[in-house]
Image (cartoon, rainbow, N blue to C red; front, side, top):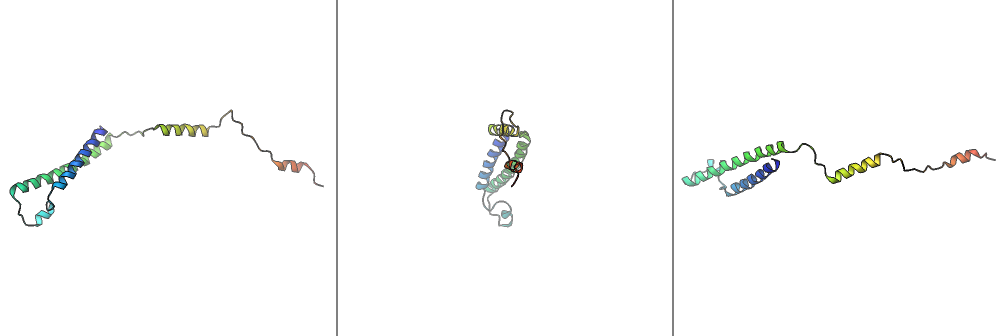
Length: 116
């Protein structure tokens, strides 16, 4: 479901880019303030492209929300992360067969011998 939503968002995004590039630069709010010199067929095409742009924007928004809801909630466990967790556990737990040598303290010998 998640992959389907992402693919649909990508298709809608490409279609929206194409719809915006096809539009006349004077369409939208700027055309309301200018002189109306458009032929009837061109005006209908402009309305269609504007409605298509808004529809694709709403579709991208809804599909993005659907993709977010369809996403897995558990984090993905990669092989590197599991190996790192095992190494941390090995380093944190002391090994029973490893003997750590203890250093002798020379100050104890100095106190044992009396000074002349």
